[in-house]
Image 1 (cartoon, rainbow, N blue to C red):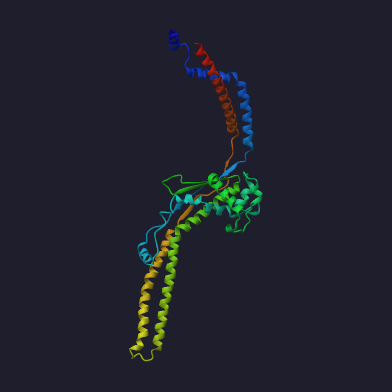
Image 2: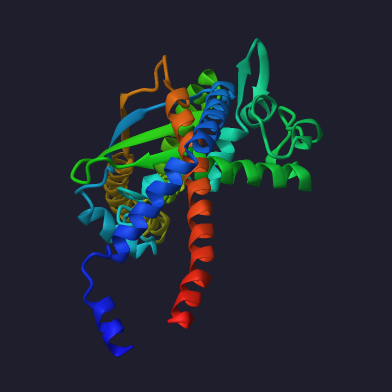
Length: 358
């Protein structure tokens, strides 16, 4: 018995297990080639039919350059603004650069675009309603039950409209809107939008970039604009005080019929002192007001479109040949795995019986 085990161990005529596996796989394919052929042909024809029934989608491409704004000219302005209790820290660190990509895909901006109005087939639609009417959705009842009338304010939406709007927003952000910075060294950005309607794709892309530009400009210049407004109000108030003092001095001089008395000169001297104080303050505030105006203009970012989304859009459609091959290979592989697994399972008990006999 021991000698027989040694002979089996050193028997070089028996092929290794890996070779046995390969041979068994080839045998399965040769024995069932007709079944693999039938399954592959039928699945391939189904794949070609499926690809032919799919509607094409259209992809837009828009690139733009961004200048964040900001710069010098803050020293004198910051001094006066700090005395007035106004923060002049620039928002450049918070709202600059790649943050515009997050703003572009934010719910606020995307919803504004979806709720904007345009004309399709000589009829005005909100973009979201036109999208619902022309796109296959998972919930078919959404097309008929939820509507977005033109002119209805966002705050007056009901629960169904809010839910539908949120659902479409997430669908667009997750699947149909792509915003990136192709080259990290350059301030050039690329926006892509995909939909099943070429006209809708272009309109949505243009609206998305314009809305992003407006909101980005708003948040970048908000502090500078508020500071400028405060300074304009203070300068106007100071100018009013100066004008009142000039008028008061003239009235006091006209009323002083006997300038020889010192007491009669007191109202004139008071007005003169007010004029000097208001005049000095007015000159400083006016100078800093010009600095604030320059700062406000300097904070306005510049978004320059390089390549706009123009017709024709890139047409994306499933390839019949590629889809047919995928549909053919996958079921054949599954069928092959089933045959291989079944042959392996049935072979294990046979080996066990041979081992027990020996």
